[in-house]
Length: 476
Image (cartoon, rainbow, N blue to C red; front, top):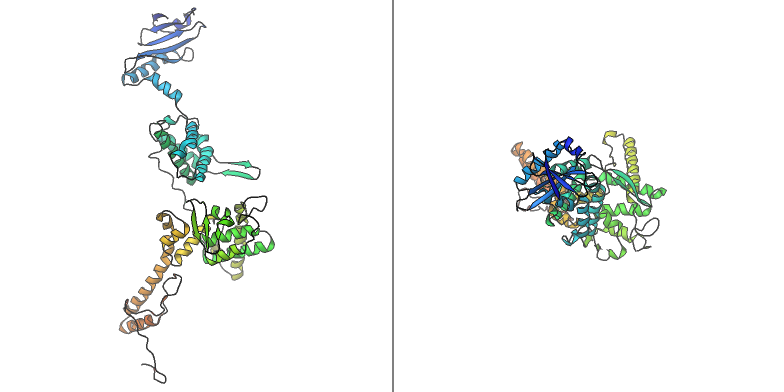
């Protein structure tokens, strides 16, 4: 290839003529900078250099006309400085051309990630796919995975929380997906992105995980625990709605089973009769969020199941078509509205303040499971046993219900404080306190059976029961 040397200027480049073959004009000011002139008359800036291994490389900088001479010199000078530091711009360009985008990495993760996580459930992979398609791909899909920075990830989490990916779309003839923002979903999507990047790091696609150091949003603690009164109102709403035909029996049964079993919504809605063991009082689920498991059922739940018709292999069959019942979220909205109306009517009838009227708008279906656990702990069940009933794999999951165990502790503290308070009143008062304690009907918090009714005035000391003989005078 013919080569020339000249002080590259606009006048010089405008005056050059094309030849039958390509030729190059090297700049006399910046070593390695040149212009390649093509037979078509097009001209393009190039930079020739030696990399750290001593090999000659050439990289295109851009076409003349798009890039001016001054800009070309500036770009060449920066690249030469990087080359002195050991960089190889030609290799970097080749790697960037072959680099995967975040969208391509996501496809590979969904396609091959299960081989590296054999214990991860199929439902969890489907959740990951949904988060990727609805949040990660729209915002980051076209970005190079290796170029993603911590700042990019933090901005991504904020954008999801702000609702930039929110939409309402139809997914099938009778289905729709309502995608919302919020800190809770942003935090969950961040964990999916982190798993993707860890996978990419292991495959050598990215050099590091840019999600590390990005603090997930905390989200709101949305657990809601029903009181005895609220459960009563909910029960009245179910009876009314079943009676007037505004609620299918299958919907009422689903809500009652959720409350009486503490099971997850998917476990109850997808329940099959072959998984119900009425003789042994349990459900034997083939699969669940935590794998195959057994759910022990109380008598009330067993009675409810026994009364349901066996018209399908599903315990709660669909109201239309085949398959199991899926319309609970919509029916739950109508039940909450009826419960609110009943609560308001009760308050007006009894002259209660409207400010204290229970409101069911914030009660989610999953809160029925929370309420079951809360009642279990309040009734004396240990956090360990309640966790076993709920099917928690980790004990810290059950610790959210620890507040409910305060009531039996408070009852015990109250007994002790009453006796001390009486003792503080003087000797006579203390004697009356001991006598009262000996006769009191103390019931330690329920554990299924009532404990000994007569309590000793001193822990560990039995109280002898005085028996008065027939006709004898009472003790003075």
